[in-house]
Length: 467
Image (cartoon, rainbow, N blue to C red; front, top):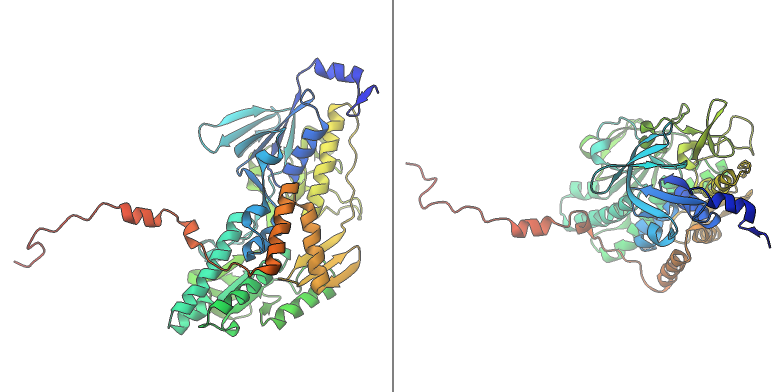
């Protein structure tokens, strides 16, 4: 009866006599959201104040981006509103532009107004990752990534728009370019994006009598000799076989060398025009980390102990914690020198362990090492198609697709989002998929600007005639 929240009344009385610790959470992705949510539940307001800073007012559940892009679920249902989920935390929408941990100070640029400094006692560094690009000519001008909900919505509208262009034109060159879709990168993001978008486009062709499935060309460019490196080679080979059966053009051991003006040039000597070039060839830690004084490894990740504490050589950086894509966390289930993979599976579990460790430190206890053996991976290859390898058990086809959906539905935060996703999937069994492009979303003021433009001045009578 004398214990509450794992702490005695005597100890709680001591905590009440001091100001609560401020925990600053930088980034609200898988790590930031889950860590903040767990901290707000484990620590009372007298023990700690949790402040979450992120440029977006929501967390994106990235495993659902392919489904949102393909129209299987509503895009809004693949994101989690921070203020709804983190009711006990202070949410600040803005970008952290600098962290001076020596002074335990962060500079934040809100979405509007002047910058502000935030003092903290503990900081969770979890800005995540960004697309890892290469200096390929034309990629900056013509490529699109696949890491954000905005990119997913844009890609969906763009692909459907290309179908409209192809159906309306009588020029075979324009049609061929419009119906050529190139995806660079054969990891999970690239394979799922390619498979789901092709599945959606093929489904949409029922409304385009002018087009045939063979008119479309879907190309996967992968620099290594296999796809899905997270699973065994036979599962990767199965995936390639399934994509080939759908008449996709799979280029393994091939690199994108240029795409200037949409002209795709590959390392195997082939070249062709394409209106769509999607870059999914890996990620790198957020460049925001460059404006901090935290130690980094040769891949620019924050160096961590298995406890998720930031470490500089042999010295623990007090009050600094990190996890997820931007952190180098030793994998204790493997040989020394191995680090946890940048997956949502690790990120969610690391966030929980880190939150517990921060609570332990605040309460005068020792932190505990993070140790989790990667359970495996699941991937969707379109409706009712998938591949999975979980705890050594391999599945393909419908069972793998069902496992993929079940697992990710269970992992997306909040009961609200779980229900909405299940409702979307249930309706899809009875109603046809929506295949309408809403391209005006990307430039909504264009029509109004044209309508509201002042009239051009009238030419005087006789003006412009030769004398």
